[in-house]
Length: 148
Image 1 (cartoon, rainbow, N blue to C red):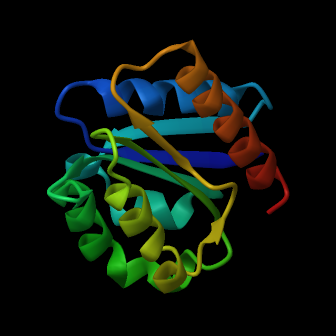
Image 2 (tube, rainbow, N blue to C red; image 1 turned 90 degrees about the vertical axis):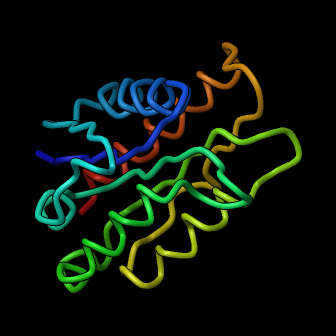
């Protein structure tokens, strides 16, 4: 029985759709619980209690949206309880930009998170190919959560 936490921020709804689709992939491997929560509402204890985590945000000014950065700052008191958890990053970015994905992944070592896959960075509208990638990344995260 495992728990997966998906923390995201969105401006246009695109990153939220990615989070929901990623959750479909997690649920395909019959994970006990998947919790999707906006970064501004996410609680550090949820992070500490999850078996695996996903973080998503749009690109703003060449990096991740500030609401997700704020969550990482607020979650620091539980960083000793997050070591070894599988984690993924996903972003919706402007064409030619990948700063948000790299910035999210920079936080993984500070929290002792183990990256699963390369993450997903979409550009423009979400098509079936992008949603398929989200489901697959979710499936990989779900499988990794069951191994903890």
